[in-house]
Image (cartoon, rainbow, N blue to C red; front, side, top):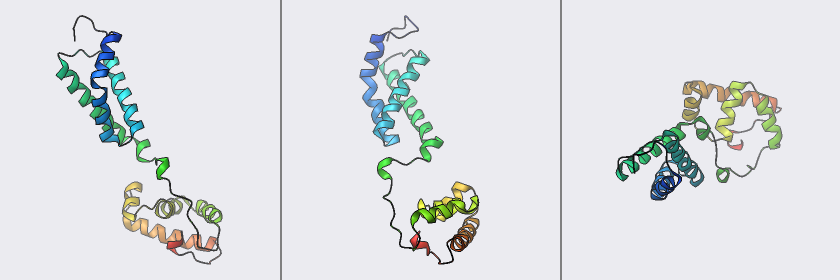
Amino acid sequence: MENHSLLWTDKELAELYQRHADLVYRLCYLYLKNPVDAEDAVQSVFLKLIRSQMMFHDRGHEKAWLTVTARNYCKDMLKNWWRTRRVALDALPEVPSWNGDEPPGKVLARLLALPEKYKTVLYLYYFEAYSIKEISELLECKESTIQTRLSRGRQRLKLDLGGNGLEPQQY
């Protein structure tokens, strides 16, 4: 790269992109494990390059800067609250079959009517299949508190559904 200007020319940017886009994409894909997210990350890394007006000493410096920037961007993406709480569409489960007497809509409606502390724990445990330990980490509560809320929430749900008692396996 010539150091004659602080701004990139279109030709220089195109050449730089051609040289390193595959490298940045592969690195982003390794971190994010999703082709769409990796493509977004590549775009963001190159936009960051354009905005920074970074001038490189040689091609090794280009590669190193893009590698570190891509890695840092992907790590930030992995820590993002949105990414940690979303589910890929292909990973969504099929509608569960219900063995109880109550239709799933009624059970879910009764569950949603419970107080927040019971509703959240029961939903995470039965519908999202989180373990007690995982729920305690998510909600920042002791595991014994989660177990108590599960037990009391089940009792309340049982009473709300007419006392016919749904076993935990049937949720």
